[in-house]
Image (cartoon, rainbow, N blue to C red; front, side, top):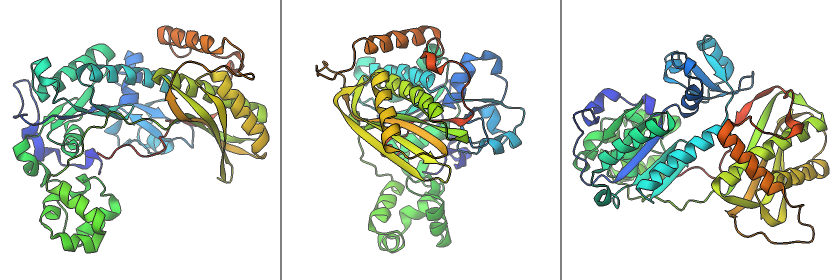
Length: 429
């Protein structure tokens, strides 16, 4: 889908919810909830003195990229995925902060808990957005879909100190588009009977699956708006785009999207990686970074109630050659020290020396935590209890409250942590 910021907001003002109410939401059970400038908003919540400053979160070095920017920074042209060096040129007065993923995961878990109090049909797409199907909750809550959206916005603000935008519609695709057009801090409601009125004036980039090249190909033959794609003969679209893509775009442009909310999506892996500001040969330094990444990965597993059997490391060298090595354990784990020991073994035994640009840790073959299996070579007892105590301390006093002694002191310069990537893309909007 094209960036929501590229869509013409003036075309949809009549769908915007206001203090006096919203359009008819009968038959509109799909909600898409998206936190506004999530990482930046959480950082500003922790530092209220930054509320009137442009704030950029991401890698702070020359190799870094922007993960999030508040709306004040965006007025200077700063955008997500932009090189940090370019963002500094555009907005030198901005406050540049490295990401704090453990904090974002904590807030995300709290927001998802709000969603799941309302309905079990919640499909997270990332830390900061999710689809909800509220059709089964309306009678119990004695409200309408947009009423649910309004409650969610109020609770997220009151309980977590950040704001979100909500799209309400008859389908997932329409709800996703609506939330993007509602930003920042708004709600858009698209009535079931007005789907094509809402969609057809939008540029073709609004259609999921239309990137820059596809949009250019369509524009070359006069298909610039969603209405043009809906009106185009299917045989013509098939010749241009292939059968599957043509039928997919034609259905969306005509307002058809029968996808259901999928609450049972299971993460296949969890991990983290670091890109260094300067390439490093020092294996002792690399091992300290593996400990830091193992700690972050294990904390993410425990926060989700998951354990994994396969530990892998990723090493990218100065020439961009990238290798991955993995080992499967006898028993699934969420213990920092066990993940770290396995990562160190992989580094020592299966990776050649050289200048390292990036290093990462990942745990795969995930499942929910169950009873522990005893094994003759099982790790010594007590590490899980220590991890859980550290989790409680960080939850109460902040992410820096407790950490392994080996990680105290100076950290190597880095381009900034990157958010853990899923093995497969999130479900399409």
